[in-house]
Length: 140
Image 1 (cartoon, helix red, strand yellow):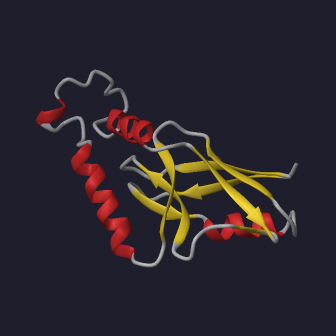
Image 2 (cartoon, one colour):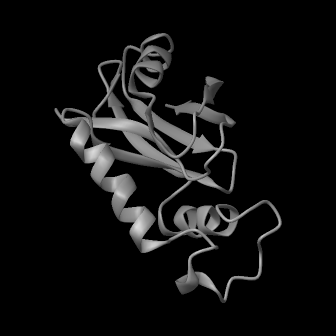
């Protein structure tokens, strides 16, 4: 069962597409069917399958999540206790809890069966840059 790790350098909050890397990994390891598992090894970022045609979708998702879960220094978040790594820390954990750290994508004919406008994204929830590790695993 093939497996690899990707490192994505983020520049702060936002969505970072990894569709091409995942497709290359699948093509390099099968020409048939299987299941691609994508897993991020962190607690303050997550994974999404989302539209990859209109960049406004990424902007709107980021804006929505910022309104849904503001920074800990926002008065609405006064009840948060975990602030060890700054005002974006606990909100990042909450955003991760609302999304997911693992995705499963069926594979056929050596390619992930994503829809026409679907892409795989790392959703960074922290303000500062990070090196994020993603595991790609292909099961028969």
